[in-house]
Length: 552
Ligand code: FAD
Image (cartoon, rainbow, N blue to C red; front, side, top):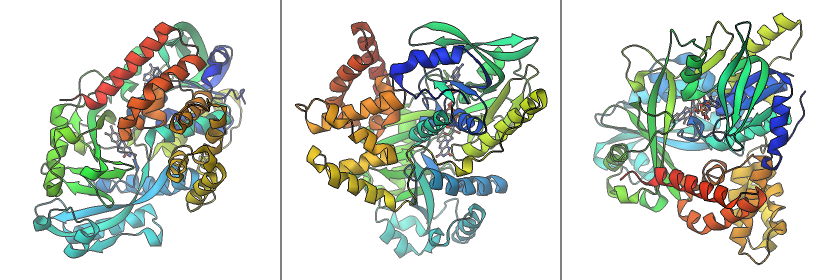
């Protein structure tokens, strides 16, 4: 097992020297959920593992999803039965292993006149969905009359309503799920770094033997050697296959998906809803904290992969769909406080529209030995990792006559998920409140911290007393979060903190105005930024901020 240097930005140079000074069994390119899952699976089976991410962990598609760990009701419609069964079972495993970030929630499916769902077919469909997914008896679907549906959700358009179905989906925080998986992989010995580009591939006797890496923060170039290399670069998978000169046969088909966020009081839903849109698609509206978010669009994408943006047309499509089903909301563009836009790395199938393309994952093999994994879902990442590492282990075993453990990630609790059962989580938050209310933080502040950091929250709270006592408690608490994220989650930039580790850019955007300067000042001190670096970091975050709000 390789050395376990934490994901500590203050020890970045040690991580880099570790990466450059040994030959790994496996090198993973891409630090989204797919790469994170593979790193955990491989490291826990005893492989030495390296992972590089060119921007921040989860900065690609893995922070831009609908943030659901779901059984994939839409796949039932497409008769992808084995996919429904697999992802359904995965939900239960992920909930058990990360109960703080994979949480069951009610989802209402309104059945409307001229919609894509009939009452009978929905009842049978949801029943089949529950059965295939192995859903617990108390969580199985309930069919509702018109009156019951309206009672459940009074904002629905009454005159088109035929009834409803209430079932369970699991909400998550995609970027935090990724970082918790990374931290768990790190605890098993994987060496991982962000802001490091796999610029080119190293070959020995025509076979891939690692990468030429570029540290984008220090602009240092170095080599990482590995016996096997996996390309888990999401929407960039074909870019790397191109570098490998193996881009033939099946290719990626990228589609763009946009979500918008409105204040909760502008769409105060009692639970999440999944509703029909005029073009026969379906859209989610999901309450979260003080907001409700709505998504997604699904359109072909051929522009800059690094910068998918939210356009006014995307926003208007989602608003129109929502206002039709929830007519009293009367949402306008001015209500939208934030947004995100992500790319689905799907596999091309001739003649299929974006929504018809399969979400199945697939592994591509190149003559050089590069193993590329594409397609799939956040929900299925553990299984995707198992399949990929099975391939790697088979190859390594035959080449080295060495045995590796079988996959057991279904039994590995993710970092922050140390709770015997989900009911213990609010009790844990209350206990922390009772022990630390002298800090001045409110009960709900502790709950919010536990929602983010789970059983690691005491490590965050313990850092509050080290902050400047003359500062207001909300600032002290955020600085403690920054310190935790810098030392345990490799936070290097303002966007890492405000967008991906804490989700503030999306769900607490108005709070950023007061927090930005103290956080930037503190990060500049601990990360030893020069005035120029600080100015660059602020300008970069301003761009990220504008991308979320400036679509008008
Ligand atoms: P990514 O997260 O994009 O990670 C790939 C990483 O590789 C990137 O971070 C990139 O920076 C890095 N990289 C690329 N090239 C290089 C290089 N040369 N060197 C180093 N690093 C590199 N799934 C669900 O289960 N539930 C949902 O609710 C859901 N909703 C979705 C909604 C939308 C709008 C979209 C777009 C997808 C949704 N999905 C959902 C699918 C899911 O989000 C994706 O399948 C998943 O996040 C893909 O993860 P990934 O790691 O493969 O790709």
